[in-house]
Length: 343
Image (cartoon, rainbow, N blue to C red):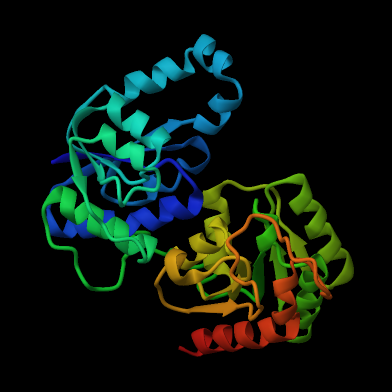
């Protein structure tokens, strides 16, 4: 059976989809997948052994420059790639209007969430078969249930398997480095810069170093600020996802905010302490070994807003993070990393 998945973004959402493929491959031997995904995340689907072809699209870029996308032929080539094969099932795993448009372009039986279940209810009009998958669950579990319904097997109750086999560190042992995942697009999720500096100093006191990935000018600026105030801090060069994955698998552990690279560490089985302030782990949590969720305890948290609107007295911004100072975070993260290393 050949199945097309439409799940374009974001990095965390793409990772959330992987366990559903593993379930399907176990339930239906011989099933194979093609996957439509944003160009920035095209490396991820190819890491799963059940994926044959990755079809990159650039909706984010095309939305900014639609005429250029048409004139360059980029849109036409992506449309042709979508229609190159006929599929037994096309599963829209996103439930948005933009993903529904891509789903309609492909050839085969279109499947997705019903109007009550989809993030954008009108997307359900694009499907031949619609499924009611209750909200209020982990995103991973909803996707596992969607795939099970569309492909007609029983969703397993066991822990999710992301299908990514963690490679051994090149030296055969973990490094003495802790990776800080410090950047994201929501300003409300950014842990204060001064807290990262203090955390780096605590990591130094424990005899460990810090590695800092970055993907934007603001993130590079933050990395330079941390590096200038602490010892044994390495600012990594700009890397693709495969290179970052190799860094993560070699690390002693990861401290990160609620963002894609933190979820990548979890999917790779790296011990990871994730900080939650404006958001909550109940729906976006990625079950796996060696994790600790560290939540802010503040009156308006989690607000689920992209920017912090709190106007009362606070020692930092976003205000909710004053309940997650660096010593609290390092105590939890350090215990996790030590336990994982002993195990």
